[in-house]
Length: 220
Image 1 (cartoon, helix red, strand yellow):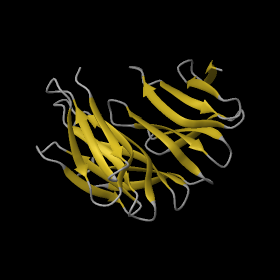
Image 2 (tube, rainbow, N blue to C red):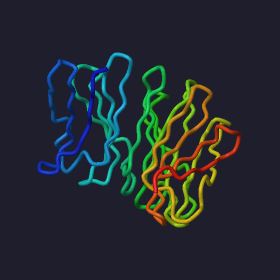
Image 3 (tube, rainbow, N blue to C red):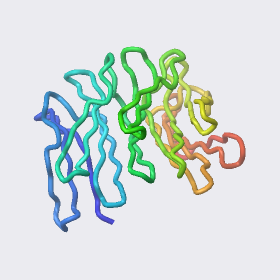
Image 4 (spheres, rainbow, N blue to C red):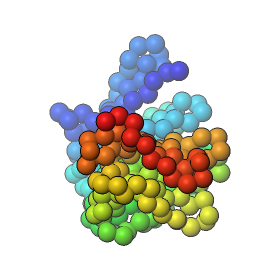
C-alpha cells in the first residue's frame, strides 16, 4: 500500500521520484542529463522496485530508468527521430518492461520491450497521425493492449498483439474523441478505456466486455 510517484521538475528540467515507503516522503532526482522527465509513466515489480519511462526533451529520445539494482540506472531506448512522447509502461510477471509511446517525427504509435534481453522497438500504427495519449496494459502472457488517439480523424483507437501480430480497431469515431486515454484489463482480459470527448467536452468510457465495443458518456 505504499505510494510511488515519478514526475517532472520543470524548474530544473529533471526526472524525479518520490515514495512514502519509509513512512515519510523521500524524494530523489533520477535523471538530470539535459531537460528530461516529461510524460513519465511508472510501474513496480513485486519487490517494489521502480521502472520509469519518460521523454528526453533535449534529445527527443525515449528513456527508461530503474532502481532494481539498488541505484538508478538510465537507458536511452529509442533515439531515432523525435520519439518518446506520451509514454506508458507495464511489466510482465518476469519483470520485463513494455512501453507504448508516440513518434513525433513520423506521427506513429511505437512500442518497445526488453523482454528479449535488449531493447527492441516496433512501429505499431503508422496510418496518418496516430499514437498520441497512449496507455498500455499487459495480460498474464505478456500480450500488449494499447489505447491511443488518432489525431487525423479524431478517433479512439485500440491495438493488441494477442494473435501474434498487431490488430488495430477504431473504438469510437463519434466526433473528436480519444484524447487522454487510460486502459485497464479485467481477469478475463476484457479491455476498459476512459477517454476525453473533445467535441462535447465529456468524459467517456468504452469496453469490449460484452463481446463488441460499447461506448458510454460518463460525465457531461
